[in-house]
Length: 134
Image 1 (cartoon, rainbow, N blue to C red):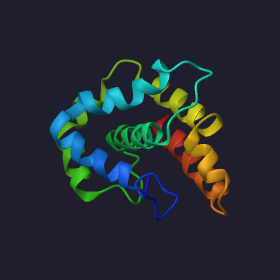
Image 2: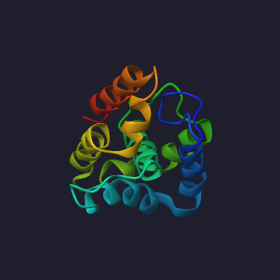
Image 3: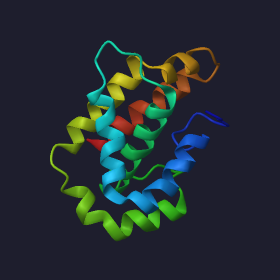
């Protein structure tokens, strides 16, 4: 994963995900979140899966009116066109919170950030996302 900052869209995987949502729609967002739960609790989560899930959760937070400062403008247009559908996905908030917790505690992405000076900043970004999704 190419990364240039510690926010959820400061990496190649999240940027690619934005393009994938244009094609795959809401199903792509939901699947990126649900895949985290579908992987065995003891399994090590791949960093790209985590980056996609965090980007997907940002879409949900934006639909709820809590957009991140770095949310991509083209993605914002997409959310505005699909806001109603995003807000009624059954159980999505709990799934988002569980995914954030899992990524923050047991993932390759966490381990990669732990090796940098921005680890605390990255954890704050996840805490902020968890607050915005609630």
